[in-house]
Image (tube, rainbow, N blue to C red; front, side, top):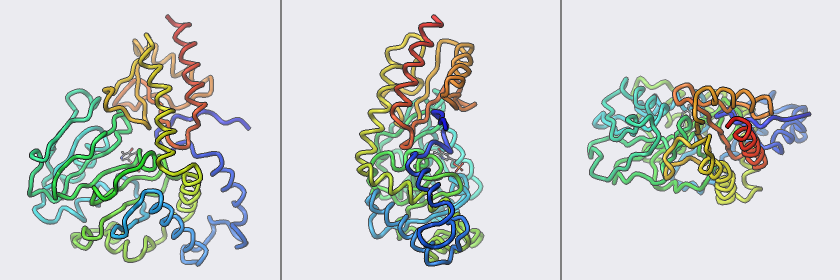
Amino acid sequence: MSRVYNFSAGPSMLPVEVLQKAADEMLEYEDTGQSVAEMSHRSKEFDKIIKDAEALLRELMDIPKNYKVLFLQGGASLQFAAMPLNFMNGSGKADYFVTGLWAKNAYEEAKKYGNPRVVASSADKNFSYIPKTTREDFDPEADYVHYCMNNTIYGTKFQYIPDCGDIPLICDISSCVLSEPIDVTKFAVLYGGAQKNMSPAGLSFAIIREDMLGNARDITPIVMDYKIVADKESIYNTPPTYTIYMCKLVLEWVKAQGGLKAMKERNEKKAKILYDFLDSSKMFRGIADKEDRSLMNISFVSTSEEIDAKFIKEAKEAGFINLKGHRSAGGMRASVYNGFPIEGVEKLVEFMTEFEKANS
Ligand SMILES: *Cc1c(COP(=O)(O)O)cnc(C)c1O
C-alpha cells in the first residue's frame, strides 16, 4: 500500500488511525453482528454512536449547556439558506462579511429571503486579506451578523472575533472547526460542512444557542427547521449514519491527541514550515496578507503561470496531489487539516526547494 500526500481542500486526508479503526470494524461493529453502514438509525447501538459523537464534540469545543448540537445534511451550502429562514425574522436585515467565495455565496443566498447588507468586503484585493470592523459598523437593527472564519479558497483567517455588541453572531467554521479552540460563548450560531476537518463528506453540523430557536418561517422545509431537528435530537429523518460514526472516530482521535490546544500547536508548527519556506523563496510566495494567514489552507504562487503549471504537474508525479489552487484564486493551495501529517509538509518543502533550484 502506498498513500499519497493529499492537499485537497475537502474531502481531505483523515488520520490513518481513524481509517484503520473503521476498516477493522467494517464487517462487525463491536458485538452487534453488523456494520454501522447497515445499522438502523433508530437502533440503540446507533443511538449510542450519535450521542457519543455529540458528547465528544461538546467536550472538545467546550460547548455550554445552553447550546444545541445538530448533525445535519446538505453541506454548509444548504445552511446558507437555513440561516435566513431560521434567523432573519425580525427586521429582515442582516450584516454579512464578504471575505471569499463561500462568504459571498452565503450572502447571495440570504438575498432570496430578506435584506442582507455587505458590512465589509475584501473583494478589492481578490480576498487576500481580512477587513477590520468596529461595533459602529454594524446595523443595530440587523437580525444577525454573518462571517466565515477561515476562507478556504483564498487562505485567510479572521484572527479576531468581530465585536457586534448584542447582535447575534453567526459564523461558518467549515474549514477551521477542531483546528484550534474557539470561544463558543461569543457566538449565537457556529456551523459548517464536516468534510474538511471532521469526517468524510455527507455531514454538516450546527451549534446553536437555544434562545435562537423557534422563529423559523412557515415556508422552512422541516429538515431545515433547526428547532424541529433539535427537538428530534438530529434524527427527524434518516441522518448520514456512517459519516456520523466516522465523525465520532475523528473526535476520539482528536481527544487522544490532546484536544484542540494540542491541535492548534501542531497546526501552527505544520503551517510555519511551509510559510517560512515561502517567505525565504525567490520563486514562490504566499498570497494572503501575512497577518491574516490561514493555518489550514496555504495559498501561494510562483513567478509565472507556466511555472505554476509545471510545479503542479511535477508535484503530482512525486506524490503530492491536489495542489492546484481553486479556479477563482489561481496559483497553488496546500490544505493541511488536522489529519494531514507533518512529514507531508516537510517533504513538500524539500520538493519545492529542489524544484526551485532546477528551474531558476
Ligand atoms: C467547503 C466550504 C463550504 C461549502 O461546503 P459544502 O459542504 O460543500 O456545501 C462552505 N463554507 C466554507 C468555509 C467551506 O470551506
